[in-house]
Length: 112
Length: 114
Image 1 (spheres, rainbow over the protein chains, first blue to last red):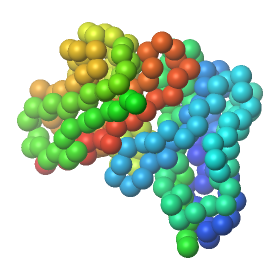
Image 2: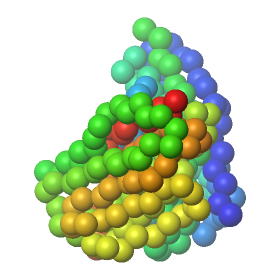
Image 3: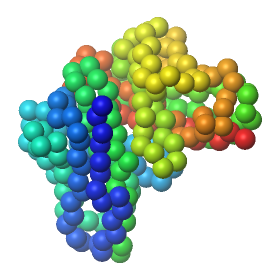
């Protein structure tokens, strides 16, 4: 059974800092991995999708890496802004027809 | 562009009452559709997914059921709600042609059982 752990559970940083959010998963036989952000009381917004054959994906100030063999993914946020404050969720997909397994997320607060 | 709609946004129901949550997707055909639940202090849990009309797969045994009467409509139901059914329910879709496509979520329904 796939288990997903996100560390830290919560993070508070001053504006402008570069930061790294960590995600680990127990079953390395994943098809791909998706990163989301969730604002309080809202649905999920897809940020990045990394296929199992890829090492990283970039979108603007966000960069996600994947080390499938070690069961790890990281989300790097450059030059953080108060608008980045949200909960960030990682979700590996198990197998080619499987579905997303979610971690509990990292709650990020960026102080102005 | 594709959009996903969920309603209602919030719902307060007494124990034992029925439930019907609706999700519709626009701008795409034959999507894969998903229902997730996010309970307090827990991660999102997949409840049901569907790859086509009338095709429903259940991930966990529970008091809920799902139906897909039309290509872009996904309904979550219960005949009698339990207190444990409280939570934040999210519908999602992905392109149906490949499992390498990202999932996109609606804004969710917050369900409180009294």
